[in-house]
Length: 391
Image 1 (cartoon, rainbow, N blue to C red):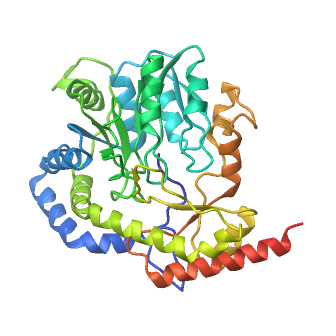
Image 2 (image 1 turned 30 degrees about the vertical axis):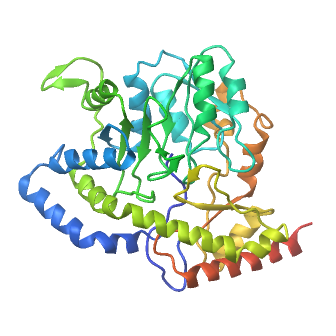
Image 3 (image 1 turned 90 degrees about the vertical axis):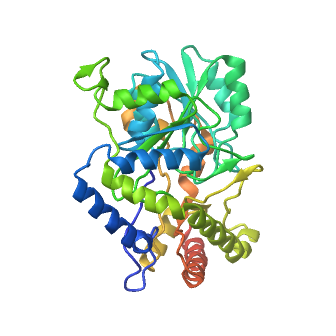
């Protein structure tokens, strides 16, 4: 779901931001300005023509039949579960290594988050751990998270869903444009929810999100619930919410969507460059580099390495002007808000270990070779310093 540690602003005083939002803005500024003028002139601020056009364009880009724009990615997850009439208290199995919004959405929809571990290589939902969670009473659905820019092992998870009779949905907040064996998010399940938080591969100028699905009826119900449960003006067939994609945000998203394939390609180039720059550190066992799972077309929402003494390395990097961050330092099953679910430290060892090692390096489509070389050099120095200071 929504990432943490997103920073805006171009490089200033020699600093390299984790995500530089302003350089992306500069590329679309003229088109966005013209679109804003068009919307301001028409007065169609809610569900205007640009929303309709963006929904059509993003559905086509995603390879799904329908897209419903909503206010944010958390709403997208909640609304798709509510539209499918999730029973009260139903258990929804998800990875422990995700942003808290994945679990929040389940609770808001009336369900119960049920956590599972991730695999050690790609940090994606582990089918074996998910199967153990699904075997518990009350399991209703699987909700894999397509983490960091690549899809979860959907064939195995779809097989698990078919064998156990649970439904399957997708948290696609970090993977706009990613595919697995030629199929994108939303094509593997009942529906997928995505976020257009500013730091995403496809980011708005504020909060926004969408549900994508091939199910026309489900899409219609999401749209109805998101508009106060109304199928026609002043007639409210069900209890709904107010969660509509703003027309001005649709203008931004349309402009960026036209560039998204190129921006994702630039991210892949930058990730490959990091692979080369950090190869010696990896060979010496000082850092674990992220990898792409077989069959996946990665879009590198983030480039997250794993290092020992992560917190000390992070402090050193930030002090040297490198805007590194962490995704995510506390697994969701250990968050205080979910204490009542009864999970404890040690329940999901891979996710817990990764939470202590993950280090997110600066990555955005316009990052330069010089910037990446500086990041790699600073990381090497920070790792050396951390080794000297380690007890």
